Length: 119
Image 1 (cartoon, one colour):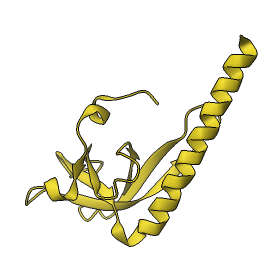
Image 2: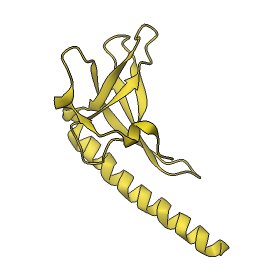
Image 3: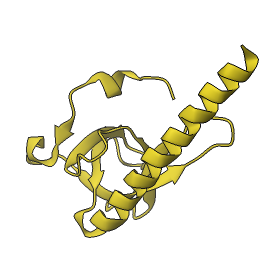
């Protein structure tokens, strides 16, 4: 996955949020496309529309208090909200982060092996 503008911004944390900022707390999932780099998503239940929203998660691995601003998926959501990791799911999220690190290492090795084979 290529770098995007929001990845270049400094990471924000829960402590940086202002009163009135909407924060959805969620759980990470690992996505391993067959021919693409592994990536993380976060799924968080929304109090506004009572559905679960999923977004890409690019915050620093291990920053369990990181938040990311996202465009609202709600039909009536307007503006946006922040998503962050649910502390109640900390063990799950840490396992997913560890699995992501391993999947990324495997993918990078495969890329190196393919480059060496075609050289």
